[in-house]
Image (cartoon, rainbow, N blue to C red; front, side, top):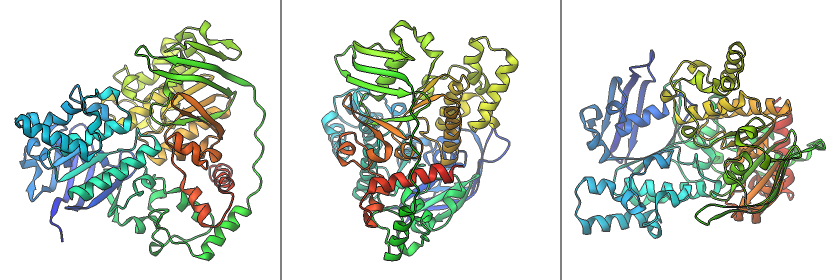
Length: 569
């Protein structure tokens, strides 16, 4: 049996600023070469556990520690953060927040330079780490020239250059497109096998992480460990749905069809799940019993883009002959690879950038006639990075800012802000400073600050990134409620679950062009579009094929309609 590298025994932690402990009676052992997934709803203590493992607690975040936490047999509270960093490498959710150097090579070399490693050895180890994560061809690039997936590889190389024993990943998939996220999980798996390091992944997207084998899943809630078991055992119970974690879509579909999930089925992946002929027949019967979905009503055009072309000052053409129409009252998704032009398109619509060619009309009016402020009265925009939007110290004031600058009476401000905070899951934190929130909680603050204004159309860049399933569904229920009142919702997203569940229509960008505009089900069962746009086939598609259902697109649509018409009512 491999030796323990990390041991929590009756461990607890309470922040100085909090009245209750964040971690309670944690007992967990991690052994060399193990791969663990830590999952749980927002606020369950996952991030606090990560901070305890990498030394940020107690060195950066102060509080009271109880029990024992040992790293290679030594109490971490008796070690320096430098000692801990020799063993634990952390890859942050926000890769941009981890960069130090002006080039990829400088960033990877940072830890070695701190250790005064000589130049020949430094170059050798930087090259070795870069090759391990397949980023060696970009060593002279600046970090801001890289895609999201490439940035993550650089962050990983930067911690691996020290040959650490534990690799800790904090929501590694949050900002990656589906195909890149899949590659990231494969890369983590390869690195773990090559180095023998223990790997700990903190992530909401359970199905995506289980694309590769995981030894154990640790499920947390309320600062405690609810389950520490194998993926097969966990997926055979109701722990996930009961605790705000989205179970894999193929598992949900099998349950809808009346198939009981058991550990001996090896349900941890669509690749491994064993389906008997009776189980397949149940899936086919469920599919065939579906009533036809109601036809979508005809709608007037709200936003119309025709032949847009936009190039940045450095000469990079981000949009080429882009033509898109958005109907009044729609809820649509814009998807595609990192750097495909999705965010640039939204910036042009909002007036942050101006197209060199083509036209943009909103309610029949040329948007070039309107300033950014005038456009903001009609079109709300929530950025992907919440730190780029927040300007107030307190959460309540941040959400109220837009209303107050518009001269809304304070009584009305209070009512609308409180209502929005409750729906966005922020009511308990309304008097908190924004600085005390996690990345995911900050994201909810920025969404709330725009939603409270009730614009005619709202564009959200990755609205659910970093959210657990419960808050994800709360936010989407709020967006659907707004959409039901006639507000048009456009979501830029990498989350294929989100696209399937909520967007009847999706527009796909690739290399600055629109390559598809169709139903979500049609797009995620189209191999050519999936390949060109760095998307990922839904596990529902493979489930349909494995059950002998010839029309996989119709099966995926059946699942969407069932969730929309039955489960979310």
